[in-house]
Length: 418
Image (spheres, one colour):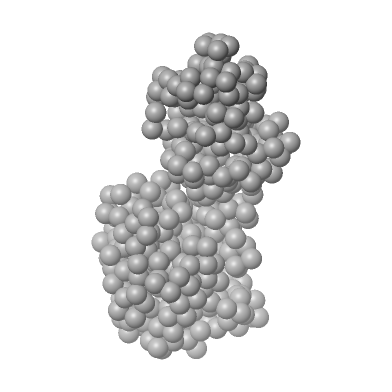
């Protein structure tokens, strides 16, 4: 059987590539090694599926720190506003939540997956499940088809690789596509976990005294060994038995990985600002005023009103202050140290959880070898890449799925009309 386009991988990018290619009249085959399409999509956004983000294009790019600028061309073909219109035209009502995140009104990822798969079928795309690909076939530096592990050979003038990265492997993302890319002569930039929890062996982590503590609207910074701030994010985080997690910890993770590698060190400092809207002097005055208002009350009990209760004993200890102190005998120098600690509570982090535990894979097919307008390989005719296999990674919040839908659409459209 000969096809115009074969798409490998039935995730966000592969489903959108299949829709875009078949819409332009191509005879399309969608292959997936699993028994179900859209598995990672089905668990995205906490099971609610954050389909895109409604920010302006330049803001979107800023939230894709891993080579986001490469996406300008594919956004010209199919951007976040097009994604919103696409789903609404298919009957999925969307709603906007904090920071531009777009969700189906149903709050169910299954709504999105079922609708996408239904559209793929409606447009006549042939689907083969439980059909793992062994290799992509080439002749005279051009694609001619694929060979399945079963031994079956399927002919095609174009192949789109949408097989994902190495994160969340239980959904089928096990890095199969990197080998096929290398066989075609492509370079794979070093893979690393991103949007992943940070690990630490600080005593307050290993003792589990802060485990389960959630911090709201704080800021988390990462510092290089020379004392320069690399990145800062404000939002929520949580202490775990192995380190820290939560949205801002995940967003800082790629910068931790890169700093450890760049400076060849075993750990770097992350720091929490518990009162990001106040200066050190303002924190000092504010907390001192609280003790002055209740001079007979211990500072430990007073500080519970403005700081996370679990952290108060630790903050006092690290500042050299006894928990039983009252206003009349407060040492001002140590109180200033407390204020500084509230503004910069240090956590030595030595890495992250594994790439398999990450939400997103950093690294991938080198973008210098891909045409940003079409997603076609610059090395082999008829070979296209889209989605997480590319060296593109963004923060959580609808940015990665936007990149997947956009690059998938561009690859499908151009593979069909080549």
